[in-house]
Image (tube, rainbow, N blue to C red; front, side, top):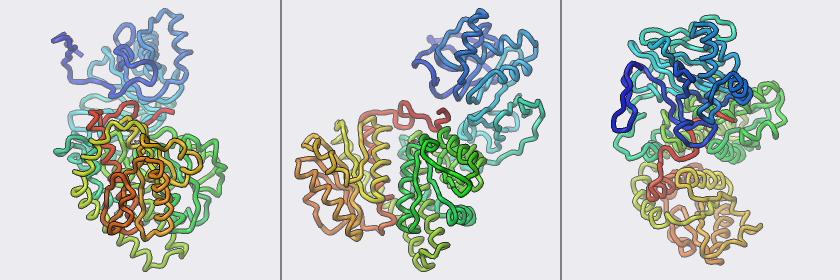
Length: 555
Ligand code: F6R
């Protein structure tokens, strides 16, 4: 703050305090003017903001009438201008801050600095994540622990309608509706800060794919009581599985697992469609799945469920996140920080946890004997070693084919049964990291229309179940035959069936035989790797793909 100077056309800045935003504004184009921080006209206040100020148009036109000239298209810019206005009236920064907050509608985590208190940071939260990092002689503010986990493991989670004032040595938290000071507990983040680093991998995505054997071990160690509490809710209630994007596909996968292992049908609903679809009431349970625990759509779905008297539960990775604190029962998945914007290891862990949850439910309702339960558990415990070996042995081949087929513009990803959500999730990986069109579809859909477009230009990936799943295997194979009969290309991801039907595929990725419970998960990991290598071959920004944020905290 004290000293600005221009060097090599970069604005450099020497200070003991600063604020910044790591992603682009929700409003306006990708331009320098729309970049945070936003400044007041007199440059006395600087603000960064995550969320959406829903009444910014009204506030903006009011301020414009009062002579304020806006420089950006963002909703955020109203905040520093309001601060300037109220500071003029009150001559007190804290009062001006609280008054400004009272004018804002929508969702926000805002952080502000001002020349009037050059050693202080002000921040506030309403429905967007915000936390403080408490070091001895340094304080941090961030939306996520990962912003400061390298420097301190002590965090204070700010709740809705709270604001905090921080200096190097101290901090205070208050409620901005009542003005009351709040004594907040310190949450200790036990995540190892080493796991937040790349550890020799070129990208976090690759590192996190390779971490999956360990992620599964962690998933198998989640608190049994937490699982049983949720299973208990499920025995008596209509259960809805909700998530969005990847976690919706995880929910879809879980639907097959609950049907297969526990003989129960639960609907899976994308969080953003939940309010329109679900007739929830006091007899319902809504189980949300979320890596960040801060996803706006999922939080909104749960709030709706709670307003109807439904019970809620969540499988969440981030400790202390909004979702983990708002539900009746929480299962912390313990996957450690997932830094890459694309979800890989967290999704796999959720699938494993949902499998063990289905097993606990089956045990409770006597759909499974203790012996069957122990066998299924043993299968899951074998997975880390199998996955580790397969990653080492097959990555070279996947790298080669990804490079060879990187210019294919359209992929069809096909699977049946539990392989269908695996196909959907694998296709999403390809879309979001490589920016290539990939459509996930159940194999059975082909003959209901899609076959019309199959020719030698259409490339498909087919997720083959093990041949021991006879019916599923045969029906998936018939989808392959339908495509090949029309000269379509098929990359088959299949298990070692001693040469059986191999001549059907154009290219094949052969996996060692594994039990049915492990098979779809193993295939998903290879599809993640295929998307990763395709993206790196195309020189995409793998860890920060365009148009996706790690936690989508806006609606
Ligand atoms: C995909 C991806 C998104 C998220 C979705 C939900 O790789 O990252 O589709 O899965 O935004 O996020 P969480 O799990 O944080 O609720």
